[in-house]
Image (cartoon, rainbow, N blue to C red; front, side, top):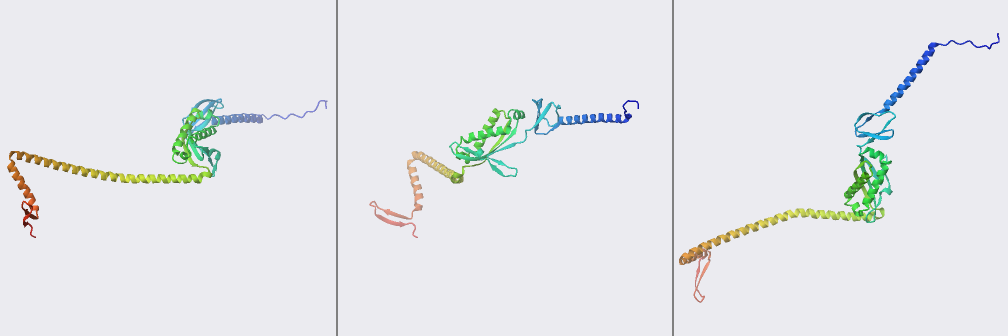
Length: 323
C-alpha cells in the first residue's frame, strides 16, 4: 500500500433513473398544482337557487347582493358569500317549544303576562315572518333570532297590558293579534332588522289555575247569553217580515175602504146636486117624484101596515103577508 487511505470504488451513475426521477417530480408538482387550481375554481363556483340571495363581501366588506338564480362565480380568496333564504316563512314560538318528537314543552316565563286590569293570564302564541332585506338582516344585528324574540315579547306584553282579561280570553283576540303585528313590524322597521311580520297567532289563553274554574263558569254564562241573544234576533228576523206584511195588508185594505167611501160620497154628492138643480126648476114635480121613489123603495120591504087616526088609535090592520 502506498500510504494513501483506501476509498471504495465509485458506483457509476445511472442517468436513466435520474431522468425518470426528475420527470416524476415535475409531473407530481404539476398534478398538485392542477388539483389546487381545480379545488380553487370549484370553490369559486356556486349555484344560487330560486327564492334565495347571496350576500357577497370582498375582503370582509359588503359589495353586492346576487339575486338572479343560476351558476355564479366568486373571486378566489377575495370574495365570500352568505346564502339567505328570503322566500321561506319562518315561525317562532312563545310560551312553549315543539320538540323533535312532536311533543311540547312549556315555557311559563314567556307565557305569563299581566293584563290592563292587573290580572295574570297564561298565553301561548306564535309569530310568522320572512326576511325581506338580507343585508339588514345579516349586518344590522348580531343575533337575529334572539333580537326578534326580544322585540316580539316586548310588543306582545305591551299590547296585553293595554287590554282587560276578558278582552284577551273572549272576543277581542283578533284585534289584539293585529295590534301586536303592527307594533312588532314598527319596531323591526325602526331597528332595521330586515324582516316582515306576516302573522301573529294567539293560540291559547287561560287564567291561572286557582281561578280557572270560576272563569270558565263566567265564560259559559257569557256564551249562554250570546246564544239567547242570537236566538232572540233570529225570532225577530222571522217575525218582523210577517208583521210588516200584515201591516201592509191592513194599510192596503184601509186605503181601499177609504177610496170606496170617497167614491161613494162623491157619487151621492153629485146626485144630490143634480136633484137640487132639478128641484129649483120644478119643485112640485120633484117633491112628488121623490115621494113616489121613496114609497117604491119602502113598501116592498113592509110586512104589516097599521092605519091609525089622528089620535094614534089603530083604525085598520092590513096584513100584507098573510102567510
